[in-house]
Image 1 (cartoon, rainbow, N blue to C red):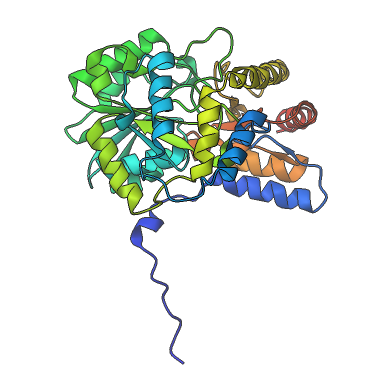
Image 2: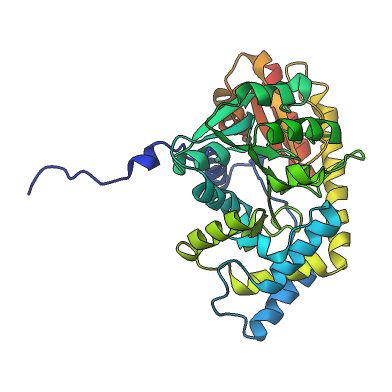
Length: 395
């Protein structure tokens, strides 16, 4: 037999960083399976069941024989429901043919990069960022341009920062509000200033609005594309049903925007995933159209609000830790730099010594912080924070 055979892995895979969130989560699950009492703050999904009426609608669709291939861009009824939702709730006058249904919100962004980005194109991403943004850009051959932001400005990019990072190769700006991992929410004034820079430099912006309904303290979600007709022409909206309706495993997301871009995405989708699971789309229609959905969202939000307050109260009493108040999503982005540890050291030692799972900030482009999710029960929150406080104070 010959020598060891080289496995032919494509170069592009080597450019992508594996997901640290999944890595930490897997480690925590393994420890739990070994019988250890692990308190996990790593989840990026609501810990609630999908609302009953959504489940029933999917069951009904199965009974009605909705089990075949569907159109690559999505079920027409769902595309209509989303266009209607965007129009009435977000003041975004998209038509149904400007909407594509994708396998989760994540795939809408991945496909968008494949449809828009050429090798060498620059995509501007504020840091801290959701960890998949830069990797999607790299997989499309683009260059992620990372713009660091500070806790003092609630980790939000300013118009002058955006302007500073624009070059002749800039093509797209990624805006996430409410934000993962920080929970920041952009105000109308901040969005107006950003929109002016985007329009003046003829950029496109993709607004990731997956957390739009999870808001606190009278915070208001504003879609950047609703500000005026000029920014609307340059806006693409990515969203999904995962967070708002506790439907993470259903994999139903969508993107709305320029019809030519949506057509290009549909072509890519037709050769990659075909269509989104047909009966899941009927569950999504019920989530968007059934009045019972509002009650389900309110119940989830009431729990998140209570948990958020408990976590902020405990953390404020630990001198080594600090974080801005989040006004959306279900995360706290906690600065651990006073402990002298990197985010990876802190997260690994915390997990090994105190059995508390968090996500190191380096995954989001900031090595001074860790992300805590409060999409978990109050017992876990109280026990986990007690352990975290002791660990930080002894660091």
